[in-house]
Image 1 (spheres, rainbow, N blue to C red):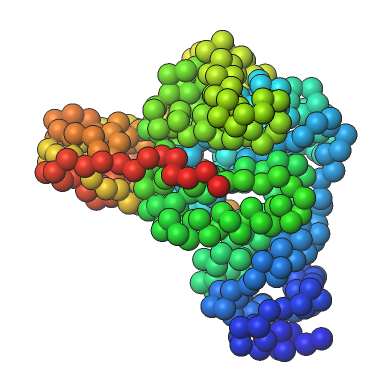
Image 2: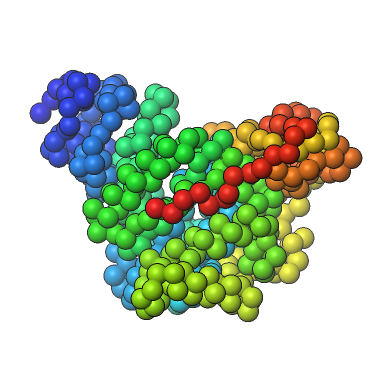
Length: 439
Ligand code: URA
């Protein structure tokens, strides 16, 4: 088999066979096929696409390129939740303890942030003492003992994706539905959960800016998951503005704790509640036959574990199990504090009409909360609190947002960029719902 022929076949829009997909994934991962040939094939896939069978085969071959977690020692269905990435998305920190408090078994591996998009592991690492590096044995034991775990992906989890993603990143081939779906789903499948709920973001802060492409990505990933024997479903959710008020690692952990205490920002609380309810339904916790009653039962159970403090207790138990100091839950000053704070005011009165959420993510990144390159270090206390949501009335006399950083010299630029990321209109404006569709 020759790589040249595989590239030529995809260039003409033909479907690749299982053998051809295995040949290029294995050959590339093992260093036998050069970057320039794989780059050409990736571009052909971007332009001509892959059908369902090809995308499923690509995902499975990528999954098999490294470690595959065996969670069969943990009794019951193992749950996972994945967001395609957004700004201020701290839902995992709420959903996991709520589901564990409801008796679910949450076994999740998370990633770090890059560029405008944050990552759950960076958020958790802002908790003093917290360890996100766990052995497979510790990972499994923690789920058995407390019902939840969240650890960094192991070094040998889907090595094919690490190599392919690095190449996609520099060859303008990231934005292909088949390539994104196989990249995400190969890692989810290798992490071993039986139930996978995908939160597919859509809007100015997401990979998928348009609703139609978000829906197509969600459907593709659901088919892959189901073809591989995992119960998979998705929510399409809004990312036209940051989720909640906080963007930045420790600020987001504190905001997640507010939701667990029952006093979180409205849209953030709504999406967390919906994600938990869907997981509740998918994981057979209920034996209620009527669908509407089942959803009502789910919402009631979720509200109860939050109101009773059981979900917050579970979060504290989780933090301690991974070596973290949970005293910040009562006293936020226990988290690293930034050297500088600056209040930001809008330059006119009106209504908050639109937002470029990626720009907001980049402001947080230059304040120190994110990485421009993979090897950059991050400042856990850096970030932004934005007091207003789209549709809100704005007055130039009230504090719109506060910037937090250790880098005084970038405050002027960050302030100007944040103001430029929003559009204030004289006319009343409305935000779209945070949960757009259940699939
Ligand atoms: N997240 C991933 O893990 N892979 C992609 O290709 C895009 C987003």
